[in-house]
Length: 128
Image (cartoon, rainbow, N blue to C red; front, side, top):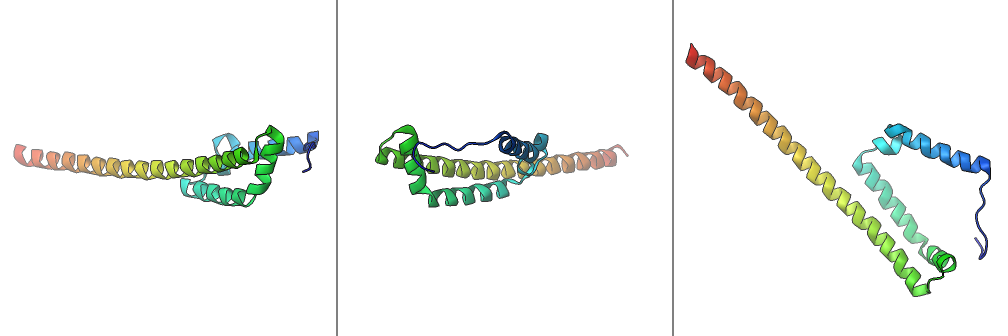
């Protein structure tokens, strides 16, 4: 990309991009929407790694597009990477906590069922 230029999509390219996004989501049944948290995190980590490889290029684009200084553009890029990494970490924690809650629910459910079954058996024994 050169200074003063802009990417131009024709109607066909724009429609193709839109169709790909709609198909990917597929009313909540698409690949991304149904992908496991683990695989989503893997994709985001890969994206972040590739984005970091383009740091200098992106920093220059921020400078040209927004008119920020070189230092401010670097800081903005770094903050964005940090935000993505913080979001990934939060998702990992949420997934871990959710998994723990589900295990507790399953344990609690098993305990309640076991208690109910033993009460029924004990109750039958007493009433006989």
